[in-house]
Length: 82
Image 1 (cartoon, rainbow, N blue to C red):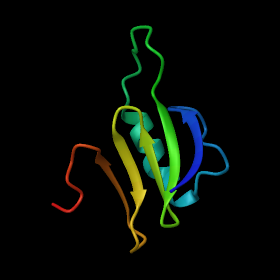
Image 2 (cartoon, rainbow, N blue to C red):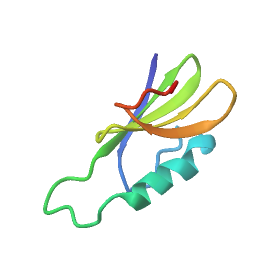
Image 3 (cartoon, helix red, strand yellow):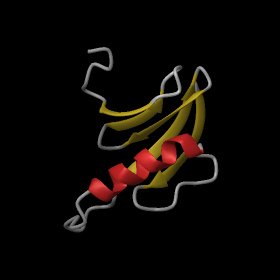
Image 4 (cartoon, rainbow, N blue to C red):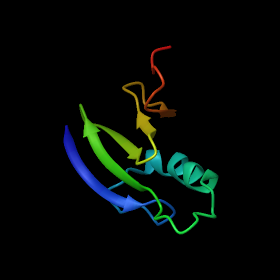
């Protein structure tokens, strides 16, 4: 696994974030509650597994590109092969 970068949800993703993930990351960010009750916003972590990008939010939301090129959004407690 190759470590990419980290950034705060709602902020512009760094240039290292592949274009293929950006629309889904933005959709997840838009779905986040705006009233955070003084809590810091969660952060994204970009990594690469077998050359494919994976962005994971501290909340457990994962945006990843599969070998087929398809980008999916799931939660880390979901079975991705179900």
